[in-house]
Length: 434
Image (tube, rainbow, N blue to C red; front, side, top):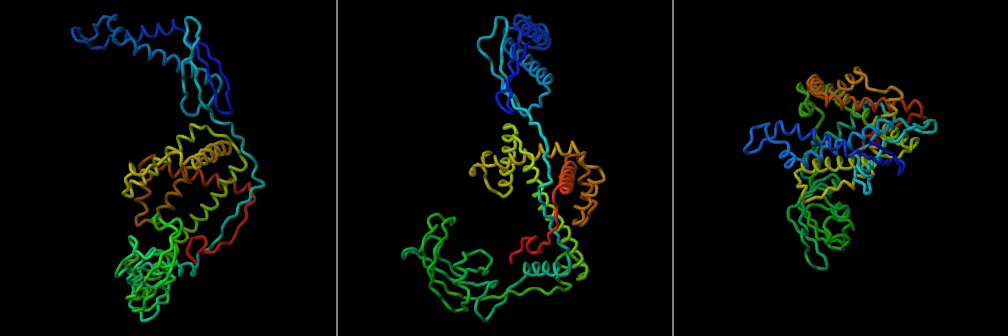
């Protein structure tokens, strides 16, 4: 067998393979003899079918397998000789004009890129800093109170946060449009269930008052027949209800899982949960900056085969997510091409991080994995149960190991880059509405 390597592009390779027909015929004969030992045919005992008949019925299969094995062997030998790291599967096609007594094939494939990690000295990383104190606990308790608020009739004008019950009629060019009419319709002003202009028009009205006003639907409104259209609404306010927030007392504490109703324990639990969430969000922000730095200092080209495979994986994940939400994906096309940019970024980062981990021995240590799993378990009622769950399956533990490796990379890069601390507001970090 002869092989000849050709380089069409940066990551694409082509190997021309020549195999001997004489070698193929020997392999075909050997395969037919092996088949003859087990092949079953009417009129013959098992293993007693004449080789000539086996060749007639199974010759094409044996020849195809023999050629495939020869090409695969030649391809593997060439790859090993050249120290090539093949990415994906080769595309193998027969070539015309082979010399007498030979078969020629062309194998086209991609290889992994050579990765040289750049310098991080000029990269800037901001580390958010936030200490959780009483003020942050109070804000969180206020959010929890609002989530558990009830409503009571209010003898005043409607304001943001109030629940109003209304009758309304909407008209476009004088005609009531589909979905533009309702009675005893409740909504909370400021909750986003209604368009902002509609909420503004209702704000300030008291029970029993009415109002006629003009407004336009946004250009991207989901009902395309109304998108960008000017309409007129008539609204009658039938009831205004103000929010009633529960007191932070024993009943409130019990509603949040503190069995004995101890408010101080509730505050301790809220603070502990906040500290874990703050830490997670800070780590996520730093990680994003580090990933961007990795890409900035190490520009690489990645194999199309890996990007295509990653794109398909992301599309499959999106499809499963839609199905879990009860949607029929056969009615909702999910194309792998939608995820190409995201997939390319993930592949690049995966290759760069793998090289960084290898070169700097940033692999996950068992004690690091254990610490991470135990930290994640702290928010569970029975932490040991989650720890046991992770350690029961290697695949689950591998997920924790991957997180530790990422953390190791982030920590390592942070020591090489220009990392500075930056105080951050609680609402900004947590994404709370102003």
